[in-house]
Length: 102
Image (cartoon, rainbow, N blue to C red; front, side):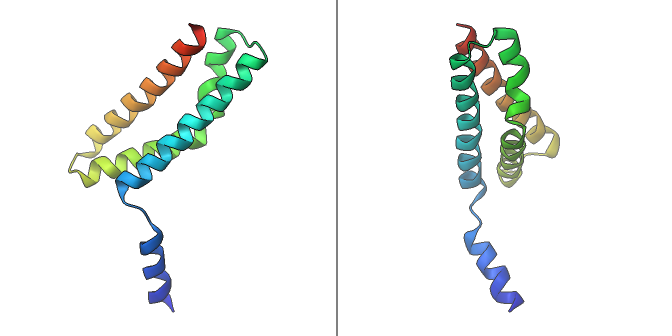
C-alpha cells in the first residue's frame, strides 16, 4: 500500500520546470488581482507598493521554492539559486509597481 501511494505521489508531482511554471502563473495572477483591486479602489501608489508583497506572500514562497528546485536540478548551488529567486521576485514586484505607478 505504501509503495502504491509513493508511486502515485511521484506520478502526480511535476518536473521542477512544470512546478515553476505553475508557481509563476499563480504568483502573477495574485499580483494582477491585487493590482486590479487597487485600481478599482484608487489606492495610492505608496499604499499599493506597501501591500503588494504581503498580499501575495504565499504565492511568492511557492515561486521561490519552485525556482530553487529547478535551479538545483540544473546544477546551481544553493546560494546562486537563492540569488536567482530573489532577482526574479524583485523583477515581478518592480514590473507590477512600475505599471501601477505609470
